[in-house]
Image (cartoon, rainbow, N blue to C red; front, side):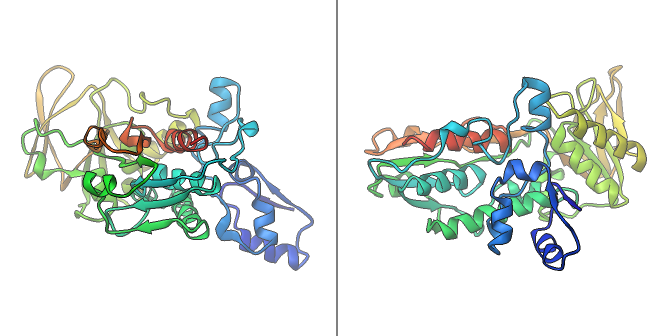
Length: 352
């Protein structure tokens, strides 16, 4: 028997079954993310499998918290009666932003029969999924990104990379619906002295800025702790600085994810400083305020800030006189996560 979960490899499964090495394949959470998994394998189309990212947010943790099973990447789980239907009136839809919310909106709109043009100002689709999948323990996010990119091709979405959609372009597009999915960017507080010496978590993960061997991560939320864990695994000396009394205390972090990170911190020797605030960034590291009010300089080669995200400035007001209906979705409307962005896009578009 072959037991496949979030990392089930369809190519290996197909080969093993063909060679008669197993009698059955048992699939766990991946079957929630992609109920058509088996058909994709049998039909030789593994690229069409929606990848489970192992986040636990909708399935295990969702059940623990609400008594209902959901899925971060499959918005129809728990809402099976809300299948996408062909629209009675077909529309011209223009989407701004090629992150997960924008791509999910494009997918649903095309399945509904609408004509879709997607503008992405960078040279690649994916948005914040790209840095999120940079960790070696989160490679499944890269698989999800590839799934969406493939869907854009298979569904014949008119994707325009390296194209910034300005208000004038959108007003002239003759669209029936404009969907703003501009996403979010890391918060880098300008009020902190020396902030230009620090690196955002996104820039660090994308390799835009070098990261030394001794690292301070400012921000002990899920993103900051995942960054810390990843660098600790690489053998770096890592310290997490968190202003609150506990790390991983905001955002309803699934208990199993939290336990894994805390165990990893203990194993790799990550230092945790709670109740501690960043005062300024200096050439030698960071000056922090300790719980007793005194200041201490922490030496580091690199100071990485991971204190949250903020929405990209909205164009909605600039489109007030646009003939098209304007809808804002995803992190550009309210910063969330994969689950909230996917569900938000799905709900906004399936009944256009």
